[in-house]
Image (tube, rainbow, N blue to C red; front, side):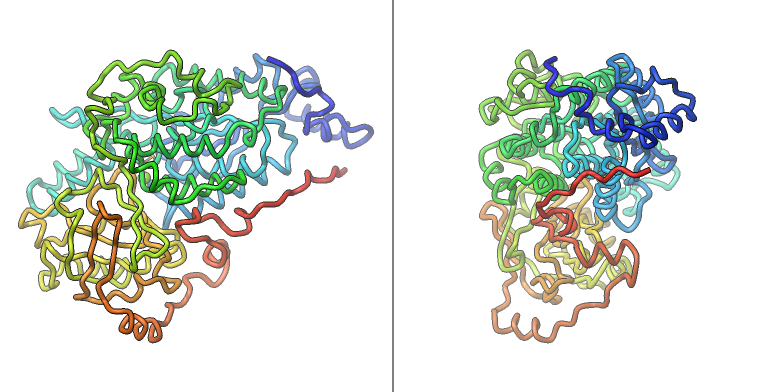
Length: 577
Ligand code: FES
Ligand code: MG
């Protein structure tokens, strides 16, 4: 390790090393907690920003990991301090964790800014916690390393060993609603799909985002693939504790590690993983926090050239545990070498190329070759047209190929409540050729684009055996979901996007291959509808919800709050008594 900075340069020294009363005060109040001078004086202070809580079902192992991280920090001569932050458990938070991603990012940034912290270990994994923590640390730009929670074990129910959290339960739900399995079996099945600590075991949003944090160079190499309960996960946590202390002395900060080229690598990997559609929103938001440009066009370009080679649900067959045994993310990146910029820096102080030099694939069915892909092109496709002038997205690798070129009449639901009330109505005028449209589910509308985009197939069609239909909304979809769902339609209906003007029976034309989504209604008629349209009243009159709807950016800009996404510097706080 080459030390670039000295003790006097540490941020925390303006607290602990201050002369007179300010420094003395910090010293005796730290001793109040039972620490001696030897524990903290003259050492970098390392924050452990933890998203643990009793209402985050994926982070139950974090208390033990925190102890392991601390061990590493002590060993390397740092002073560890644990700082709890918003836990944003995907399972429980309503109406949408996306809103709270931004609150977590604010919380993380402000905790770091207002305290004597020299470097930070970010502990997250469940969906929004990864982008939220990274966005906050990126804006603060002090040395930071990410500890991904790791995925839970494979699901298991009776003779079945390949049950994916979410992905398999959606299928069981459809079977239950169609009367094919009874309630007892359906419930027991669900319990079998989530049976250990860790994040969802499919390539859902959690595993997508932790994998992409790994590609960006913000984790120890390959850390994102280690199952949550594997002993190597504990070892990784401890090594992160050691490494962050070194990073402080090396003054290696997020803006030194991550470049636009790192983001383009992440986009390539995202295509090969057939990652969650949520990743478009999160990567764009994260890039903007680092002052880097990333747009939907970057995703569109990558999706032409990179096949899906990761055979993990929901686009493939296996689960995250199998992905790890097959060599994990580093092995996948090795296969993608020709597409990547290997000179990108990482938290190890080494390049991505150096980190994957020895990686190898141990199972060619789980991590495929380009010649034998899961899907011949990128998993995610950006679509535009008069219904989505600023873009929409579909996970085509998880959609029925027969529906990818389709024209059908719209069945419109004005909002989520309206959809719930009518979708199973036997009199709903819907056939397998209809296009289900959900309005008012966008960043401002719902608010926070809840994961409603995989609209349920109407019960009467389910009973006829229909399992996929074209569905269109300004909502998001769980990374574990599948189907011909056009998501993130931008601009959203609540702000007067064209989606707001669709009416029952209008023909909608989708061409995934041609990248087009059009509403086949003539412009004069649309103009009439536009003039007659009145925005629904806002959901909130006060509080964080108000702040969100007044400042949230649209999906193509990452759904960050405008005042957090914009460039600018914030000075370190003044000393006080
Ligand atoms: Fe936490 Fe899926 S619910 S990762
Ligand atoms: Mg999810």
